[in-house]
Image 1: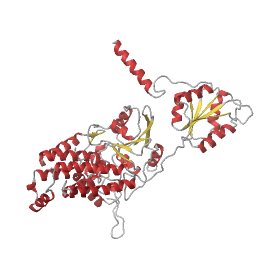
Image 2 (image 1 turned 180 degrees about the vertical axis):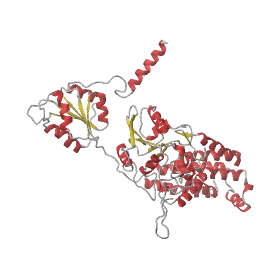
Image 3 (image 1 turned 90 degrees about the vertical axis):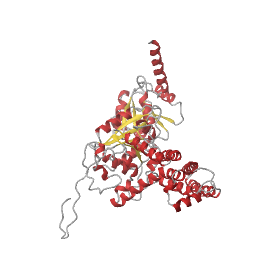
Image 4 (image 1 turned 180 degrees about the horizontal axis):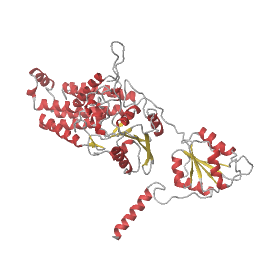
Length: 532
């Protein structure tokens, strides 16, 4: 028992030593000595050169020494000078010649001098370094155990621009940025409803990253919201540098190839998901917003599907489904047919296929796997290199390598066509690129060993696995299984918006009705026809 207690105490001391200042233990209150407080702050930041300490004497109490503390590059110099420093230097809080007492100086500066919009009192050192790292300015007075923290944030941010990963022909061109407050503002502009609620959390013992849980009160499912809160509060890690860190901690099936948490960098997409009853998780420092629950059918849908007429959109969704099947099965079918099931091909096609493979030294499964690896190398090179060079490398590399391999007799010409079609089909459904590559490799191996029987076996296992998954309590393959007839209105087909009067039932929204009936078209005589 003594050994166990010793280990627990040692672990707690190690955790406290490796955590952030002030993460464990009682708060450290400010002292009345200004020099002592400044030394504590400078020692905490290691006398970093970007920690600026501006000493001055307030105009309301010239006999009192004061200091302005902030981190260079994280504040707006104009706001700092005009709304914080200048009022403190020139202010007369009482309008009389009698200076205020030292203990009342903080209250006078808070009420009458500092013109910043967001000002609060701070009384302990741990709170001060939090405020400084958040981009706020701290004002300390000699003889006062309390200081002021004023908002003067002004670091460089990227402007709102067209998102690079979700291009659309019709729809909004706005995309989220790396600034959390800007992203929340982009959502607020789309909701003229005070029931859009935002809850802030701080995750990461070192990075202290600000995270926002966003939901539409009265629409979002209470069970999903409670589960999202529980999972976020259970996240315990050293740093959060991107929303992908949190995604790996809160997803339902971390060992599955399928992602059970969605993401988007378009405000209109996130707004639409919130209106369906989902919740959004926004992380400071990244434009990608997490969405939950996330269903498989959503990967076949696009933001502009709801901005166009339903007939064309339905055709596009069917094309995306076909492309996804091609991306995971086409190389496997080629391997299965050329290795085991030549009798399934028409005679003319079988002769042509045999002619293209004449003289190739490797079996079809080696060709398929090798060309798949080459294609991924070219794709990775095109992504990582600068954009002008990357595009040239991808196109020229594919043409040169493919043509040279065929002329050298290493692979058949039909194999190049199969790999090219597979690569193009992969990019049609970008949300399933990661899973598609893994499934394509697995199906190709099964086809090389068992032929078409291996492909069927792989389809059965992968479908059964997907049917067992859930996302925040919602079945991953909804509304296909469990089957829901109303949910089919927005799956591979897209019914007219006025037909989809209710929110998806599988999400368990608090408010099921989202729109009224569609007005009827005018009658031939010009008389209104009421509603449908």
